[in-house]
Image (cartoon, rainbow, N blue to C red; front, side):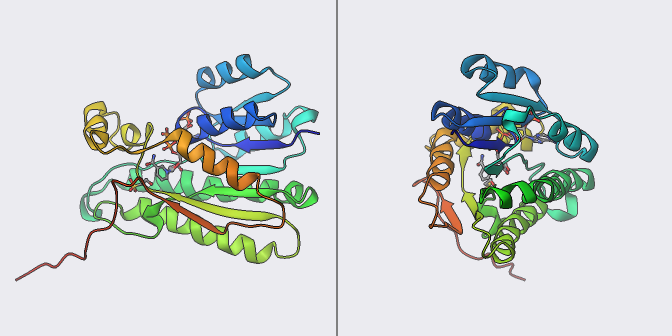
Length: 249
Ligand code: NDP
Ligand code: 8X3
């Protein structure tokens, strides 16, 4: 019998590539996001028995509950939750950053993620399922302008480890995937729609692709059930670390 995965943020980037990867491998996929027109082609390509589109704003708890309640029976038994929907907003230093941007990141990357996880934990435990949380290298390595975004991703990584501890003995696996630079709509969103800035960031950098990350998600999900990857950190070869900064008098 085929397994079912719920992937948040399946309208773009990692989530869209992962939805395709799982559907192509025969999984049933619940694909979520706000942009219905981006989900419909997935349903058209793989069929309504393979892909179910659930359109809602993940920050809206009532809409989330309604979407879960409206799942067709064939998609009700969820084996894998991929908490992928998320965003960065802004690159300004904390003292110049927009509080609204900070709140949007926290509402999306943290509050929505824990809300959906809380809703689905009973089903995941019942099926000895798995959770894959998309964190970031920003969870581990701070950088100027990363402030609240890095904070949300540090939460995601630590929450993942905490879930591991609490789910001990249930058979439920939990992984935090921590990617570095990957070209998706991430920078377009972060810059509030500046395509030139996005192109400039990725130009010549040979960044990771959405497909690269989808392959890692699929790999983690299909490991033998006695194996748990706790954290998986990935970067393009072109990206590495820089030193501490020193402010001189
Ligand atoms: P994209 O911008 O391409 O995709 C983001 C996805 O999140 C979209 O499908 C979007 O759907 C969804 N989303 C955002 N806000 C909401 C919301 N309020 N309600 C529902 N869905 C929402 O970016 P990526 O694929 O790169 O990002 C995916 C994840 O990976 C994010 O958590 C990001 O932080 C993380 N990440 C990205 C890296 C990168 O370099 N690209 C590196 C490390 C981590 P829609 O707008 O249609 O609602
Ligand atoms: C995205 C990676 O380095 O832009 O999470 O913060 S980075």
